Amino acid sequence: MGLRELCRAAELDPSFLSKVLAGKRNPPSDEEVLRRIAVALELDPARLITLAGRIPSEWARLFNDEFAFERVDRLLRESRPARSPRIAAPARSDDFGEELL
Image 1: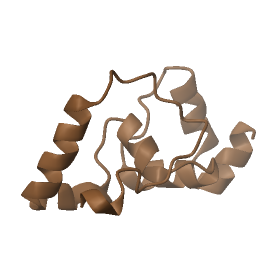
Image 2: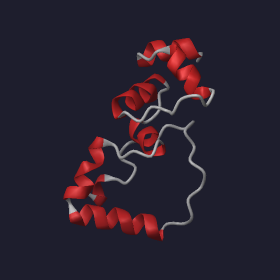
Image 3: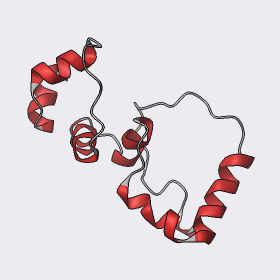
């Protein structure tokens, strides 16, 4: 997908994204913008938002449900060392599974 095609699909200014790719501007941090980019690239929005250093709004229940937060935290701490994140393979937003929550 070309830059202009991506920008049309994500409703972004091509000059902005071009500057981001050239390192002249910071990447977008707004969740809605990241969601539009993810959808345009057929990626999981929660994964892209997380890779951008943000916490997706749908994960807010983790902070309100102590059991869910502790379970996810324990899983992450006990899991094997993290590998480099791969954006190319879209992941389901429910990777932790409903049985955990």
